[in-house]
Length: 453
Image (cartoon, rainbow, N blue to C red; front, top):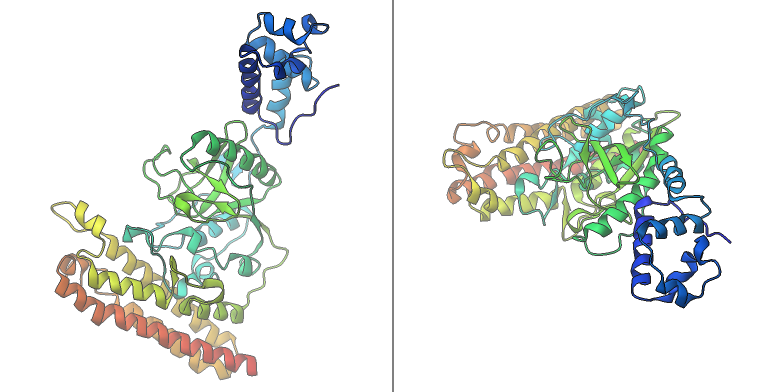
């Protein structure tokens, strides 16, 4: 009687199983004899007789192949190679060549929105980045991971930028499915456990890629292990290919390459550095339906850190994120203590500049979106939508001096001087926060007017 292969069989796992049987044989453990009795020379032998014989790994592998109903180890391997063949039909590739790229500076732009733009291209569609980052709610306020010790990276994490994806996927042209994988067994530094887990994930993802879905991941990149130097682990991107046997997960990183490796995945998605990061399967929606009111509701939640963007002790959104940003500027010389300690003799860190640039660009997109809403929605709401747009214009103006590389408001000037940093917190960042409060109040009033009409 043969034994059925496990679900999602792996040649590596079967090799390990054969080695365990051989180890048991060498230790005189009778548990190995049932499988070894598949060998013709042992059919009528007792356990004691089998354990007194001399066999090697090849004989054990042959016996294991027979156990699973194959005529040889080579035939078993051929079967597994066919089962685990890497997908060739990924929507990101055409005849093995790249069909799209995920491009854009993930520090200053929304990497989830960038990835969605690339996914739309893979489906032969067009998606505007500014509209995508607004529809997701991300353009309307900062998002900060308080446990990220480098402030250059505190606004870039994909796991903070995909919160609205399930709600607005259809608006952006996608059917969206959040993917879930089994929990990884073993500590995060256990390479064997991580490899085994990636194999399971690869086997789950391969059919999705083969059927033409695009898989978006909100982080989890191998920082140093890829072929293109440093790649921030937290950027969102798209899976381009998987190797089920080797447990390789390769994807498109926001800086233009398709073969960046992912590291680890857990029960609700990726789990780098202890943080939950989701993976999503994207397919073309049958119809795209924009919903300005739903976007305005997301914008309000983003600013106030509620509902979809609920702030907690680690993940801060909108006003709570601004409070944290202001506190750091008032407290830490150089704004980012780790970056300041590693700075070059001739320069100052770019971390403050990158955060200000990100906020300024997002505010420009938010303002344009709100101005568009004031035209598309009910006339009773127009005053408040225009006022909310003006609040974001104020933020753009407030941050203009910060993003220059010279001048009295430049971070090249103020960083490291605590008096100037605290002055910046009072004269720039605090008014930015006040403008966000004003924007939220007017968006709320606009929603009241629209819903009352």
